[in-house]
Length: 467
Image (cartoon, rainbow, N blue to C red; front, top):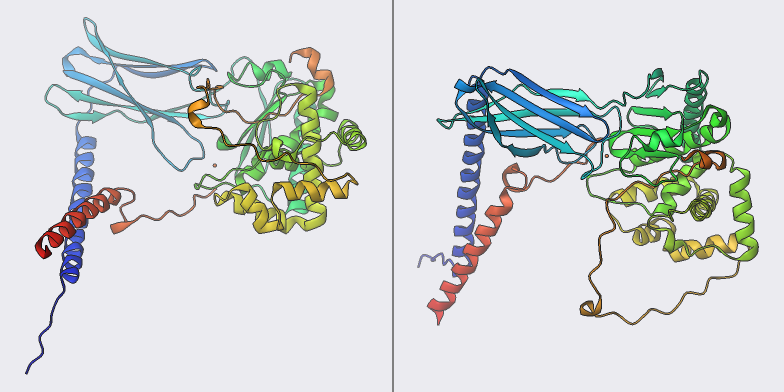
């Protein structure tokens, strides 16, 4: 008797699911192809004659965009697309529908990017923009993409360069060469002591004072003497010629270390490093600690007055003296880790954090201890008694916590100025990403949701038939 092949209801459902998934993939591919063809068609549409297409940069406050074309072009809507070149996992320009103003002979679209709402890019950044226009018949055209560089026109900049570094300055003939030499020395320290190399070119702007530098930024602490912009590979510093040899050289190495370490430990996963690690590495890259740092460590050791290391995971105090103590403690901890465990462990920690691992878990994975354990080992090395940690507080019910007011825009932790500056007041190659079903990026997530919903209905029908 010939055997019969019996298919269970579950196998039938599975077969139908696979068939539906395949059809869904084909459907999505066809949509993507249609959109690509439509985009090609848009690009082939003749653009109207443009009278002017300008972006006027009022650094650092705003950018004024203006597009004008003849009134007989019958354009009914205009959308501005703009972005700034930087290290990012998402290449997505901002899009702004702009109202049209009709004049006698022309139509004008004007819009202002007020950077007081978003923060301003540093000088040297590249602005890109274009417009899409729709006419009365629904035809869409795109203007030719244009670009312009953000520049601080208040000063006449001089330039000096070496491999991987372009340095700009305007005050003091010897300042540029001196600080470029310091930058090269800092790169040597990072490579020799930490095994970390510069991954991408860096632009460095040396302002003649910390006050001049802060006037180039809309959001920065009032005591800042230098700021590193990881995503733009740019450093800004305020250095008086009289302090270039001392404070200027160490700060150059500090800020450059921020960029180099940021490039080395950067990924699209979104991993982050505690502030004490970031600043401690930058302090270490400065070379031998200065007298102020040594004195701060000695006094805190004698008085057993160091802050809990875990409290230095976030932003440092905005007060100069308190920030200085936090920097000194951060340097001491990083120096301890490098001396006791070596550069390979530090590299492993940075790369583990870049994978998105939480910092306690990353420390456990690399050093076998969390941040409290690191602090305990460091305190033993300094001859300090163990820190007494308070008991875990009783959990607070969310309903009992009042609504908090946001504290403002996130900022990089800048480097404090030297004492003689105070009165003067002053993203790497992308990580490969999984593309999902059919290799179409995130779009298949929609299909997966539809299939899951369909499966649920199929199972319900199956149960109904059984009952």
